[in-house]
Image (tube, rainbow, N blue to C red; front, top):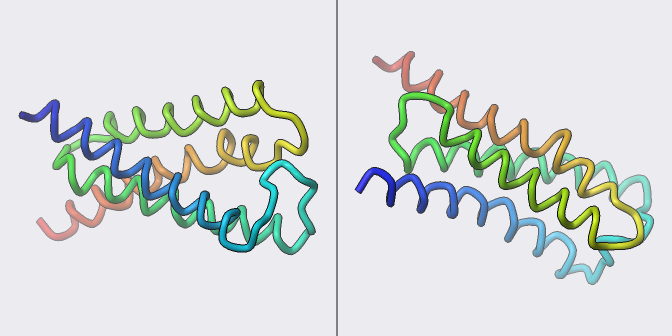
Length: 122
């Protein structure tokens, strides 16, 4: 049962991040591989940091884990899909690079923050 909970928590944490990214580009009809305007680039990176943090927090909350192992799995998935996308697509790769260098670590910070708050309450 713990394994199933961990799998579901990682999937839901990833979905928070991935669906937010889809909405970011689909709603305003922006090509994610086009060269972005500077304001959109900054906004999209801050947006990705927020939602990867929330995804990491949620993963830790749902998994009921006492360490960051489950968040390392989430971070590897975020970075892994970004690396695959980097290799398989053309155009600007800022979002994939940001996913690998910023968003994957941000998901770890989200899990760490959850655990820190949990310790402070106990």
